Image (cartoon, rainbow, N blue to C red; front, side, top):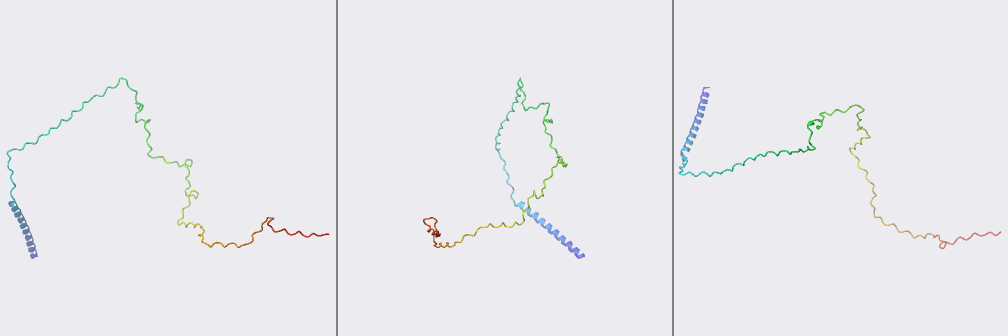
Length: 182
């Protein structure tokens, strides 16, 4: 324990000596810089002073306006304008002031006589049916298939012309039946 205490004391002494040496070194460097720097140049005294700048004359402030008294009222007084309020009713009189709006509106009356029944919202008559979640696709509109180019119909077979009903063109009438002689 004795050796460790001596070594720690010696270490602290060495550190303090190093700090003192560094401080002395810095002080000597600053003193050398001050000695090596040239002295500041002295200003030679001037024999003649330069004249001061000319003084600018400020214009005097304008005189205050002369107060003119208001013109005297005319001898004959005019009637007051139409918007003149009568002194009997000041501005804040109830006649000219609308009543304040109610802070809390009265609750509606719950009597059956004064309350209309609400419309039946959930009744089927007043409610449209809900749309289907997955609506089926609309049925396809039937359209005839496009015409296939078929061959033209066969020409008609030559048949004898139909008999004409005119007497001139009709076949001769059948012979009359034979008469029986009695």
